[in-house]
Length: 121
Image 1 (cartoon, rainbow, N blue to C red):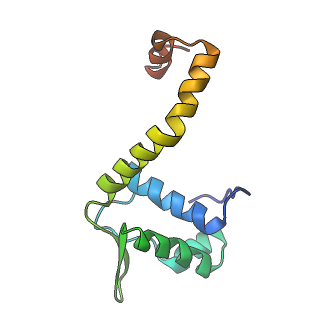
Image 2: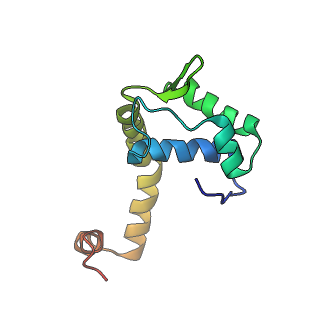
């Protein structure tokens, strides 16, 4: 995890988002442990309580579970549930903004697909 904090969100939220991305991208797989709170705090040079808050939010969201004496582990089905949630959020909140911008710029479906496929460069 690299250390590039944004000012628009608390650090614990940014740590949570990094873990969510790692789960979605397969960097942390279901059944695997999360890095220890101490290790993440040391790596990112943040207070361990900040990391603990991020991990607790993940547990509250039902994506990880605490195993006594072992740490936090990604639960089975976390990636699928997270992916479905992210899709819904994208389609309801982000996609309408993108569509409006596409229309404003007068872009065609062909132009967009060409760029997505890497041929537009």
